[in-house]
Image (tube, rainbow, N blue to C red; front, side, top):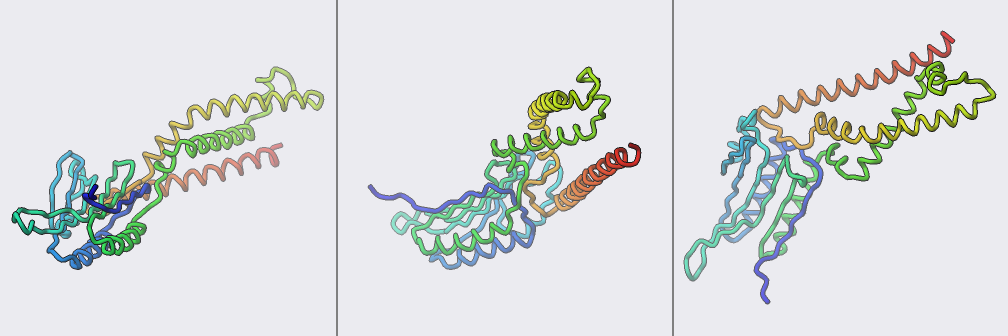
Length: 270
């Protein structure tokens, strides 16, 4: 049995941040290794857009000058290196894609690259440089991190416990007495603690049920997984980062103010 083709492929599960500098660096690596092959080579850029159209480009400057906005926003870029050659006997075109690098914002695996050639040494040298460069464009993705089921459940459980703890601290004694139905004294303190534990357990269970969808929805709304940082995407990305910063600061200030107000209410107002 003969081997038809052999190659190497790798997948990257994190998101990516691809700006002009990183694109040109990747293209330079591909060109340099393409020049080492015996035959002529050609690099193409297959661009898929939000409106379900695509175009094939051969110039990286044309790629980076795309509008990248609204319905023409880029959602996927497939970079391919083709070795141009003809069959020595029949003369027919025998060109083949020897390297491909796929950046896809909407795929569950955002980055995939494949190398296929009979020269194993050439493949390994290209793999080493591409792998190093791709690691530089990776970025942590909160929503993809939370897509891991066990991490999502642990995050939801942790959030539920934290919220429940805050609620229990801020919950007035009079309200707890109303729920329990009796006045809290030293004699019934143990029973009160048990009742409070049961109450907070039910609260944690409820929050656990609803927090999964809240965490998932909010992370997808405010996290930026992958970015083609050129064209109008620059403005959109920077605006979203500004919103993220304001949300984080707002939540932080709200927590600090609530803790201070709670302490003042207990210590100053009695």
